[in-house]
Amino acid sequence: MALLFGWRFSFFSQGVKMSERPSKILIQGGRIIDPAHGRDGIGDLLIENGVIRENFPPAEKGESNGSENAKREMHRIDAKGMIVVPGLIDLHTHIREPGFEYKETVATATAAAAAGGFTTICCMPNTNPVNDNQSVTELILEKARTEGVVHVLPIGAITKGSRGEELAEMGELVTAGCVAISDDGLPVMNSEVMRRAMEYAKIFDVPIIDHCEDLNLTGDGVIFEGSVSTSLGLKGIPAASETVMVARDIALAELTGGRIHLAHISTAGSVRLIREAKRRGIPVTAETCPHYLVLTDERVMGFDANAKMKPPLATGQDLEEVRAGLADGTIDAIATDHAPHAPDEKNREIDHAPFGIIGLETALSISLSLVEEGILSLPDLIGKMTVQPARILGKKMGQLGPGDIADVTIIDPNVEWHVSVSDIKSKSKNSPFLGWNMKGRARTVIVAGKIIENKWT
Ligand SMILES: [Zn+2]
Image (cartoon, rainbow, N blue to C red; front, side):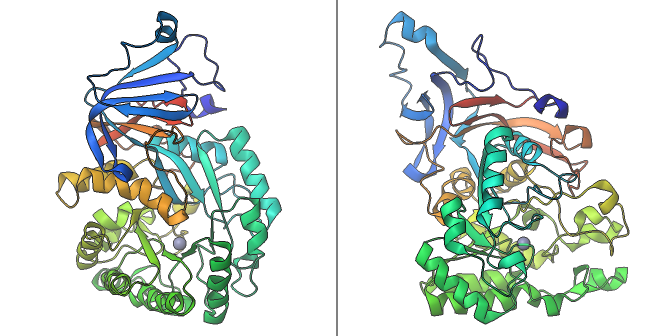
Protein backbone atom coordinates (compact mmCIF):
# COMPACT_ATOMS: atom_id res chain seq x y z
CA MET A 1 0.00 0.00 0.00
CA ALA A 2 2.73 2.42 0.95
CA LEU A 3 4.44 1.95 -2.42
CA LEU A 4 1.33 3.20 -4.17
CA PHE A 5 2.10 6.67 -2.90
CA GLY A 6 5.68 6.71 -4.01
CA TRP A 7 6.68 6.09 -0.44
CA ARG A 8 9.58 3.89 0.41
CA PHE A 9 10.56 2.22 3.64
CA SER A 10 14.17 1.46 4.01
CA PHE A 11 15.83 -0.58 6.69
CA PHE A 12 19.58 -0.59 6.67
CA SER A 13 19.83 -3.95 8.42
CA GLN A 14 19.78 -6.81 5.98
CA GLY A 15 16.73 -9.00 6.01
CA VAL A 16 14.63 -6.79 8.26
CA LYS A 17 10.95 -6.96 7.33
CA MET A 18 8.71 -3.94 7.34
CA SER A 19 6.86 -5.02 10.45
CA GLU A 20 10.08 -5.62 12.35
CA ARG A 21 12.53 -3.30 13.94
CA PRO A 22 16.22 -3.63 14.70
CA SER A 23 16.67 -4.58 18.34
CA LYS A 24 19.38 -1.95 18.79
CA ILE A 25 19.81 1.35 17.00
CA LEU A 26 22.68 3.75 17.61
CA ILE A 27 22.17 7.26 16.26
CA GLN A 28 25.64 8.73 16.13
CA GLY A 29 27.05 12.21 16.30
CA GLY A 30 23.90 14.30 15.91
CA ARG A 31 22.88 17.44 17.79
CA ILE A 32 20.44 15.98 20.28
CA ILE A 33 17.76 18.40 21.45
CA ASP A 34 15.54 17.11 24.25
CA PRO A 35 13.65 20.11 25.65
CA ALA A 36 11.96 18.05 28.39
CA HIS A 37 15.35 17.44 29.99
CA GLY A 38 16.91 20.77 28.99
CA ARG A 39 19.42 18.93 26.84
CA ASP A 40 21.07 20.33 23.71
CA GLY A 41 24.41 18.95 22.58
CA ILE A 42 26.31 16.67 20.23
CA GLY A 43 26.06 13.03 21.20
CA ASP A 44 24.80 9.54 20.50
CA LEU A 45 21.39 8.09 21.20
CA LEU A 46 20.95 4.39 21.87
CA ILE A 47 17.62 2.66 21.28
CA GLU A 48 16.97 -0.87 22.45
CA ASN A 49 13.81 -2.88 21.77
CA GLY A 50 11.75 0.18 20.91
CA VAL A 51 12.72 2.32 23.89
CA ILE A 52 15.43 4.90 24.51
CA ARG A 53 18.19 3.26 26.52
CA GLU A 54 20.60 6.09 26.87
CA ASN A 55 21.72 9.36 25.46
CA PHE A 56 25.34 9.86 26.27
CA PRO A 57 28.31 11.98 25.27
CA PRO A 58 30.54 11.00 22.33
CA ALA A 59 33.48 10.02 24.55
CA GLU A 60 31.65 6.84 25.63
CA LYS A 61 30.33 5.93 22.19
CA GLY A 62 29.03 2.65 23.56
CA GLU A 63 31.35 0.84 21.19
CA SER A 64 34.03 -0.12 23.65
CA ASN A 65 31.73 -2.35 25.66
CA GLY A 66 29.83 -5.38 24.48
CA SER A 67 30.83 -8.43 22.48
CA GLU A 68 31.54 -8.53 18.75
CA ASN A 69 28.16 -10.17 18.30
CA ALA A 70 26.36 -7.34 20.05
CA LYS A 71 28.18 -4.83 17.85
CA ARG A 72 27.02 -6.62 14.72
CA GLU A 73 23.39 -6.52 15.87
CA MET A 74 23.66 -2.79 16.32
CA HIS A 75 22.05 -0.80 13.55
CA ARG A 76 23.96 2.46 13.16
CA ILE A 77 22.65 5.75 11.82
CA ASP A 78 25.17 8.47 11.01
CA ALA A 79 23.61 11.71 12.21
CA LYS A 80 26.57 14.08 11.86
CA GLY A 81 25.28 17.49 10.87
CA MET A 82 21.74 16.38 11.72
CA ILE A 83 19.41 17.42 14.54
CA VAL A 84 18.03 14.55 16.61
CA VAL A 85 14.80 15.38 18.43
CA PRO A 86 11.84 13.58 19.99
CA GLY A 87 9.32 12.52 17.34
CA LEU A 88 7.08 15.47 16.50
CA ILE A 89 3.51 15.37 17.87
CA ASP A 90 0.62 17.02 16.02
CA LEU A 91 -2.34 17.90 18.22
CA HIS A 92 -4.57 18.74 15.29
CA THR A 93 -4.95 16.49 12.22
CA HIS A 94 -8.09 15.82 10.20
CA ILE A 95 -7.55 12.27 8.95
CA ARG A 96 -10.93 12.13 7.12
CA GLU A 97 -11.39 8.39 7.67
CA PRO A 98 -14.03 7.09 8.14
CA GLY A 99 -16.34 8.78 5.65
CA PHE A 100 -14.16 10.99 3.47
CA GLU A 101 -11.52 8.55 2.24
CA TYR A 102 -11.35 10.37 -1.09
CA LYS A 103 -9.68 13.26 0.77
CA GLU A 104 -7.37 11.29 3.08
CA THR A 105 -7.09 7.95 4.85
CA VAL A 106 -5.28 6.70 7.93
CA ALA A 107 -2.65 5.23 5.57
CA THR A 108 -2.05 8.44 3.60
CA ALA A 109 -2.31 10.79 6.60
CA THR A 110 0.24 8.79 8.58
CA ALA A 111 2.52 8.58 5.52
CA ALA A 112 2.30 12.38 5.21
CA ALA A 113 2.96 12.69 8.95
CA ALA A 114 6.13 10.59 8.73
CA ALA A 115 7.29 12.59 5.72
CA GLY A 116 6.83 15.74 7.79
CA GLY A 117 8.70 14.38 10.82
CA PHE A 118 5.67 13.55 12.95
CA THR A 119 5.60 10.28 14.88
CA THR A 120 2.24 10.98 16.53
CA ILE A 121 -0.90 12.65 15.18
CA CYS A 122 -4.09 13.36 17.09
CA CYS A 123 -7.14 13.05 14.84
CA MET A 124 -10.17 15.31 15.07
CA PRO A 125 -13.60 13.69 15.33
CA ASN A 126 -15.36 15.39 12.39
CA THR A 127 -15.47 12.23 10.31
CA ASN A 128 -18.59 10.49 9.02
CA PRO A 129 -19.80 9.09 11.33
CA VAL A 130 -18.51 11.58 13.89
CA ASN A 131 -16.21 10.03 16.48
CA ASP A 132 -18.73 10.45 19.28
CA ASN A 133 -18.83 6.83 20.47
CA GLN A 134 -16.64 3.87 21.25
CA SER A 135 -17.18 2.02 17.98
CA VAL A 136 -15.79 4.86 15.84
CA THR A 137 -12.82 5.31 18.18
CA GLU A 138 -12.10 1.59 17.99
CA LEU A 139 -12.38 1.60 14.20
CA ILE A 140 -9.81 4.42 13.93
CA LEU A 141 -7.44 2.69 16.34
CA GLU A 142 -7.74 -0.58 14.42
CA LYS A 143 -7.03 1.18 11.11
CA ALA A 144 -4.07 2.91 12.72
CA ARG A 145 -2.73 -0.43 13.96
CA THR A 146 -3.06 -2.18 10.61
CA GLU A 147 -2.47 0.62 8.08
CA GLY A 148 -0.81 3.49 9.93
CA VAL A 149 2.92 4.11 10.03
CA VAL A 150 2.90 6.55 12.97
CA HIS A 151 0.95 6.66 16.23
CA VAL A 152 -2.65 7.87 15.93
CA LEU A 153 -4.39 9.27 19.01
CA PRO A 154 -8.13 9.82 18.49
CA ILE A 155 -9.98 12.85 19.81
CA GLY A 156 -13.62 12.26 20.72
CA ALA A 157 -16.52 14.65 20.11
CA ILE A 158 -17.84 16.96 22.82
CA THR A 159 -21.43 16.60 21.65
CA LYS A 160 -23.34 13.90 19.82
CA GLY A 161 -22.80 14.35 16.08
CA SER A 162 -20.87 17.53 16.98
CA ARG A 163 -24.27 19.21 16.81
CA GLY A 164 -23.52 21.26 19.92
CA GLU A 165 -26.65 20.11 21.74
CA GLU A 166 -26.30 16.91 23.76
CA LEU A 167 -23.03 15.79 25.36
CA ALA A 168 -21.44 12.62 23.98
CA GLU A 169 -20.55 9.85 26.44
CA MET A 170 -17.18 11.23 27.45
CA GLY A 171 -16.33 8.38 29.78
CA GLU A 172 -16.93 5.83 27.02
CA LEU A 173 -14.74 7.79 24.58
CA VAL A 174 -11.88 8.13 27.06
CA THR A 175 -12.07 4.44 27.98
CA ALA A 176 -11.99 3.53 24.27
CA GLY A 177 -8.77 5.52 23.81
CA CYS A 178 -9.63 9.16 23.12
CA VAL A 179 -6.97 11.50 24.50
CA ALA A 180 -8.95 14.74 24.29
CA ILE A 181 -12.45 15.98 23.53
CA SER A 182 -13.38 18.46 20.80
CA ASP A 183 -16.09 19.39 18.32
CA ASP A 184 -13.38 20.89 16.10
CA GLY A 185 -14.60 22.13 12.77
CA LEU A 186 -17.44 23.60 14.77
CA PRO A 187 -17.69 25.53 18.03
CA VAL A 188 -20.03 24.60 20.88
CA MET A 189 -22.27 27.65 20.56
CA ASN A 190 -24.36 26.91 23.67
CA SER A 191 -22.36 28.21 26.65
CA GLU A 192 -24.23 26.04 29.13
CA VAL A 193 -23.40 22.88 27.16
CA MET A 194 -19.76 23.99 27.03
CA ARG A 195 -19.75 24.57 30.77
CA ARG A 196 -20.99 21.04 31.44
CA ALA A 197 -18.47 19.61 28.96
CA MET A 198 -15.67 21.30 30.88
CA GLU A 199 -16.98 19.94 34.17
CA TYR A 200 -17.05 16.37 32.78
CA ALA A 201 -13.64 16.77 31.16
CA LYS A 202 -12.29 17.63 34.58
CA ILE A 203 -13.68 14.38 36.00
CA PHE A 204 -12.11 12.32 33.18
CA ASP A 205 -8.91 14.38 33.26
CA VAL A 206 -8.80 15.16 29.53
CA PRO A 207 -8.41 18.54 27.85
CA ILE A 208 -11.20 20.11 25.83
CA ILE A 209 -9.76 21.29 22.52
CA ASP A 210 -11.70 24.39 21.63
CA HIS A 211 -12.46 25.56 18.09
CA CYS A 212 -13.06 29.22 18.93
CA GLU A 213 -15.60 30.68 16.52
CA ASP A 214 -18.87 32.53 16.88
CA LEU A 215 -20.93 31.19 13.97
CA ASN A 216 -23.28 34.15 14.02
CA LEU A 217 -20.39 36.57 13.59
CA THR A 218 -18.85 34.37 10.89
CA GLY A 219 -22.13 34.20 8.98
CA ASP A 220 -21.29 33.34 5.38
CA GLY A 221 -17.91 35.04 5.58
CA VAL A 222 -15.18 33.64 3.36
CA ILE A 223 -11.95 35.39 4.36
CA PHE A 224 -10.77 37.77 7.09
CA GLU A 225 -12.85 40.95 7.36
CA GLY A 226 -10.66 43.91 6.46
CA SER A 227 -9.22 45.88 3.58
CA VAL A 228 -8.47 42.74 1.55
CA SER A 229 -12.02 41.37 1.81
CA THR A 230 -13.34 44.80 0.85
CA SER A 231 -11.08 45.15 -2.17
CA LEU A 232 -11.88 41.63 -3.37
CA GLY A 233 -15.59 42.02 -2.72
CA LEU A 234 -15.66 38.90 -0.55
CA LYS A 235 -17.65 38.57 2.66
CA GLY A 236 -15.49 38.92 5.72
CA ILE A 237 -15.15 37.02 8.99
CA PRO A 238 -14.35 39.53 11.75
CA ALA A 239 -11.46 38.91 14.16
CA ALA A 240 -14.09 39.06 16.91
CA SER A 241 -15.55 35.77 15.68
CA GLU A 242 -12.52 34.12 17.29
CA THR A 243 -11.84 36.48 20.18
CA VAL A 244 -15.35 36.52 21.67
CA MET A 245 -15.23 32.72 21.96
CA VAL A 246 -11.71 32.79 23.40
CA ALA A 247 -13.02 35.23 26.01
CA ARG A 248 -16.10 33.11 26.73
CA ASP A 249 -14.16 29.90 27.12
CA ILE A 250 -11.52 31.48 29.33
CA ALA A 251 -14.43 32.61 31.53
CA LEU A 252 -15.84 29.06 31.55
CA ALA A 253 -12.44 27.56 32.35
CA GLU A 254 -12.21 29.96 35.27
CA LEU A 255 -15.69 28.98 36.39
CA THR A 256 -15.18 25.22 36.15
CA GLY A 257 -11.44 24.74 36.67
CA GLY A 258 -11.51 22.44 33.62
CA ARG A 259 -8.50 22.26 31.32
CA ILE A 260 -9.11 24.01 28.03
CA HIS A 261 -6.83 24.04 25.02
CA LEU A 262 -7.52 26.75 22.44
CA ALA A 263 -6.95 25.57 18.88
CA HIS A 264 -5.46 27.44 15.90
CA ILE A 265 -5.11 30.88 17.49
CA SER A 266 -4.83 33.51 14.75
CA THR A 267 -5.58 37.00 16.07
CA ALA A 268 -3.84 39.59 18.22
CA GLY A 269 -6.90 39.97 20.45
CA SER A 270 -6.92 36.25 21.28
CA VAL A 271 -3.22 36.28 22.17
CA ARG A 272 -3.77 39.19 24.57
CA LEU A 273 -6.70 37.43 26.26
CA ILE A 274 -4.75 34.19 26.67
CA ARG A 275 -1.71 36.02 28.02
CA GLU A 276 -3.85 37.71 30.66
CA ALA A 277 -5.66 34.47 31.54
CA LYS A 278 -2.38 32.62 32.04
CA ARG A 279 -1.11 35.43 34.23
CA ARG A 280 -4.15 34.85 36.46
CA GLY A 281 -3.51 31.11 36.63
CA ILE A 282 -6.49 29.92 34.60
CA PRO A 283 -5.88 26.38 33.22
CA VAL A 284 -5.69 27.39 29.56
CA THR A 285 -3.22 26.35 26.87
CA ALA A 286 -3.09 27.36 23.22
CA GLU A 287 -1.75 26.38 19.84
CA THR A 288 -1.23 28.21 16.59
CA CYS A 289 -0.48 26.85 13.12
CA PRO A 290 2.47 27.50 10.80
CA HIS A 291 0.30 29.39 8.30
CA TYR A 292 -0.67 32.02 10.89
CA LEU A 293 3.03 32.61 11.51
CA VAL A 294 4.07 33.34 7.93
CA LEU A 295 0.97 34.29 5.90
CA THR A 296 -1.52 37.17 6.03
CA ASP A 297 -4.81 37.84 4.26
CA GLU A 298 -2.76 39.37 1.42
CA ARG A 299 -2.15 35.75 0.37
CA VAL A 300 -5.80 35.57 -0.76
CA MET A 301 -5.39 38.41 -3.27
CA GLY A 302 -5.24 35.93 -6.16
CA PHE A 303 -8.52 34.33 -5.03
CA ASP A 304 -6.59 31.12 -4.29
CA ALA A 305 -8.84 28.73 -2.35
CA ASN A 306 -5.69 27.09 -0.96
CA ALA A 307 -5.39 30.18 1.21
CA LYS A 308 -8.92 29.74 2.58
CA MET A 309 -9.18 28.23 6.03
CA LYS A 310 -10.82 28.74 9.42
CA PRO A 311 -9.91 30.86 11.17
CA PRO A 312 -8.96 32.96 8.15
CA LEU A 313 -5.49 34.40 7.53
CA ALA A 314 -5.50 37.76 9.31
CA THR A 315 -3.44 40.97 9.16
CA GLY A 316 0.27 41.60 9.60
CA GLN A 317 -0.42 42.98 13.09
CA ASP A 318 -2.14 39.74 14.04
CA LEU A 319 0.76 37.73 12.67
CA GLU A 320 3.23 39.77 14.72
CA GLU A 321 1.21 39.28 17.92
CA VAL A 322 0.85 35.53 17.31
CA ARG A 323 4.63 35.34 16.82
CA ALA A 324 5.17 37.32 20.02
CA GLY A 325 2.77 35.00 21.86
CA LEU A 326 4.65 31.99 20.61
CA ALA A 327 7.96 33.48 21.72
CA ASP A 328 6.83 34.50 25.22
CA GLY A 329 5.07 31.21 25.99
CA THR A 330 1.49 32.49 25.70
CA ILE A 331 1.10 29.99 22.86
CA ASP A 332 2.31 26.60 24.01
CA ALA A 333 2.34 24.54 20.84
CA ILE A 334 2.44 24.53 17.06
CA ALA A 335 -0.17 22.26 15.44
CA THR A 336 -0.91 21.75 11.76
CA ASP A 337 -4.74 21.79 11.46
CA HIS A 338 -4.03 19.48 8.50
CA ALA A 339 -7.36 19.57 6.64
CA PRO A 340 -7.28 17.73 3.29
CA HIS A 341 -9.78 18.52 0.53
CA ALA A 342 -9.97 17.03 -2.97
CA PRO A 343 -8.89 19.13 -6.00
CA ASP A 344 -12.41 19.40 -7.42
CA GLU A 345 -13.56 20.88 -4.10
CA LYS A 346 -10.74 23.40 -3.82
CA ASN A 347 -10.86 24.33 -7.52
CA ARG A 348 -14.27 25.91 -7.08
CA GLU A 349 -14.65 29.68 -6.80
CA ILE A 350 -13.22 30.80 -3.49
CA ASP A 351 -16.64 31.55 -1.92
CA HIS A 352 -17.78 27.98 -2.64
CA ALA A 353 -14.58 26.07 -1.82
CA PRO A 354 -14.37 24.38 1.59
CA PHE A 355 -12.23 25.81 4.40
CA GLY A 356 -8.93 24.14 5.24
CA ILE A 357 -5.42 23.34 4.06
CA ILE A 358 -2.99 20.47 4.46
CA GLY A 359 0.01 21.04 6.70
CA LEU A 360 1.77 17.91 7.93
CA GLU A 361 4.55 17.97 5.35
CA THR A 362 5.41 21.68 5.53
CA ALA A 363 4.94 22.42 9.27
CA LEU A 364 8.51 21.64 10.30
CA SER A 365 10.21 23.61 7.51
CA ILE A 366 7.95 26.63 8.00
CA SER A 367 8.56 26.51 11.75
CA LEU A 368 12.33 26.23 11.25
CA SER A 369 12.20 29.47 9.26
CA LEU A 370 11.11 31.21 12.48
CA VAL A 371 14.34 30.09 14.10
CA GLU A 372 16.30 31.51 11.15
CA GLU A 373 14.42 34.78 11.62
CA GLY A 374 15.32 34.84 15.30
CA ILE A 375 11.71 34.64 16.54
CA LEU A 376 12.48 31.73 18.86
CA SER A 377 15.33 29.36 19.62
CA LEU A 378 15.58 25.91 18.07
CA PRO A 379 15.08 24.11 21.43
CA ASP A 380 12.01 26.30 22.10
CA LEU A 381 10.59 25.43 18.70
CA ILE A 382 11.22 21.71 19.15
CA GLY A 383 9.55 21.90 22.57
CA LYS A 384 6.44 23.40 20.99
CA MET A 385 6.21 20.45 18.59
CA THR A 386 7.09 17.65 21.03
CA VAL A 387 6.94 17.83 24.81
CA GLN A 388 4.50 20.74 24.96
CA PRO A 389 1.78 18.96 22.96
CA ALA A 390 2.43 15.89 25.12
CA ARG A 391 1.95 17.93 28.30
CA ILE A 392 -1.27 19.41 26.95
CA LEU A 393 -2.53 15.84 26.54
CA GLY A 394 -1.13 14.84 29.94
CA LYS A 395 1.00 12.13 28.28
CA LYS A 396 4.61 11.21 28.97
CA MET A 397 5.75 11.50 25.37
CA GLY A 398 7.91 13.83 23.31
CA GLN A 399 11.10 13.21 25.28
CA LEU A 400 14.31 11.25 24.98
CA GLY A 401 15.03 10.01 28.49
CA PRO A 402 16.03 6.43 29.31
CA GLY A 403 12.93 4.23 29.24
CA ASP A 404 10.92 6.55 27.00
CA ILE A 405 9.32 5.11 23.87
CA ALA A 406 11.75 5.43 20.94
CA ASP A 407 9.93 8.03 18.88
CA VAL A 408 12.69 10.06 17.28
CA THR A 409 12.96 12.48 14.36
CA ILE A 410 16.24 13.16 12.61
CA ILE A 411 16.19 16.52 10.85
CA ASP A 412 18.52 17.61 8.08
CA PRO A 413 18.58 21.36 8.80
CA ASN A 414 20.32 22.36 5.57
CA VAL A 415 18.53 20.42 2.85
CA GLU A 416 16.68 22.71 0.46
CA TRP A 417 13.52 21.54 -1.22
CA HIS A 418 10.63 22.74 -3.30
CA VAL A 419 6.99 22.11 -2.39
CA SER A 420 5.40 20.39 -5.38
CA VAL A 421 2.26 18.33 -5.91
CA SER A 422 4.31 15.31 -6.95
CA ASP A 423 6.26 15.42 -3.71
CA ILE A 424 3.24 15.52 -1.37
CA LYS A 425 2.38 12.20 0.28
CA SER A 426 -1.01 13.37 1.50
CA LYS A 427 -3.89 12.27 -0.71
CA SER A 428 -4.92 15.92 -1.04
CA LYS A 429 -2.67 18.68 -2.30
CA ASN A 430 -4.42 21.81 -0.98
CA SER A 431 -1.39 23.64 0.35
CA PRO A 432 -0.84 27.41 0.23
CA PHE A 433 2.89 26.66 0.13
CA LEU A 434 2.94 24.94 -3.26
CA GLY A 435 5.84 26.40 -5.22
CA TRP A 436 7.69 27.59 -2.10
CA ASN A 437 11.35 26.86 -1.52
CA MET A 438 11.93 25.39 1.91
CA LYS A 439 14.95 24.63 4.04
CA GLY A 440 15.20 21.81 6.56
CA ARG A 441 13.34 18.53 6.52
CA ALA A 442 12.90 15.30 8.45
CA ARG A 443 15.28 12.75 6.96
CA THR A 444 14.35 9.85 9.21
CA VAL A 445 11.62 9.11 11.71
CA ILE A 446 11.73 6.29 14.21
CA VAL A 447 8.36 5.16 15.52
CA ALA A 448 8.61 2.98 18.63
CA GLY A 449 11.95 1.69 17.29
CA LYS A 450 10.77 1.20 13.71
CA ILE A 451 12.86 3.14 11.20
CA ILE A 452 11.23 5.04 8.34
CA GLU A 453 13.63 6.71 5.92
CA ASN A 454 12.09 9.58 4.01
CA LYS A 455 13.03 9.55 0.35
CA TRP A 456 12.32 12.69 -1.56
CA THR A 457 12.97 13.70 -5.13
ZN1 LIG B 1 -10.91 24.08 14.12
